[in-house]
Length: 114
Image 1 (cartoon, helix red, strand yellow):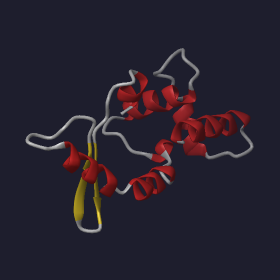
Image 2 (cartoon, helix red, strand yellow):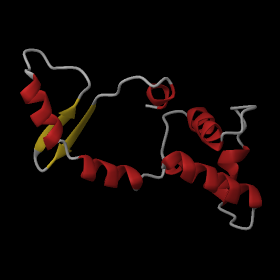
Image 3 (cartoon, helix red, strand yellow):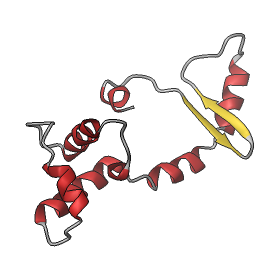
């Protein structure tokens, strides 16, 4: 997702809403006429998808490898430098709200989440 947005590529999305799968796509589906594509786009639950995305707190997510989470957090901090710096994860685990670096991290994470 990050690479798609960063490179301004096209992103197809699917959503499961009210018992149905919905798809939004830049491209036409096979054998789809423009009317069908427009109807499919109109029925896509944009409001529900946006509401759910706005509630995501990416920094609380899990990764199969801890180093992946560390790298993702460091990219979200938008600081550059060493992406393998574990101190960002240590600050989150400590949850010390008096730590000014943690506060700064959370501000950056909220920008990345929105």
